[in-house]
Length: 93
Image (cartoon, rainbow, N blue to C red; front, top):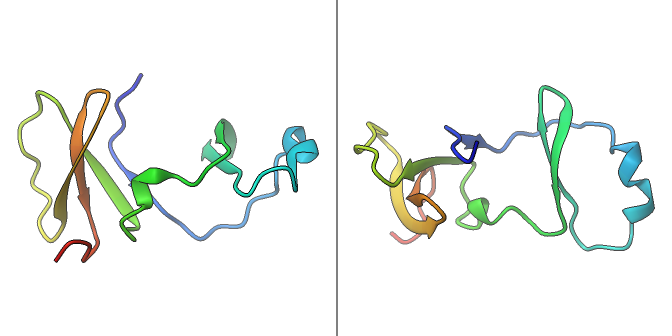
């Protein structure tokens, strides 16, 4: 359950989850992650996988063969069973 195929930043307004209402103004960031409009995860920080200015993050998991991610840049960023990401950013050039 730790593997995922792709993070993609989107601009979509969603109603703030009512269950979290009492947290508003108590934290600088409330990062809510959804699948099919269902709240699955909450963090009180920004998503670090987008710290490169990217809008896409495709993980390269340990033991996987290289992915064909033409046009994307690889960034080494180990975490748990991940080696890094393919991202759509000019970071580091």
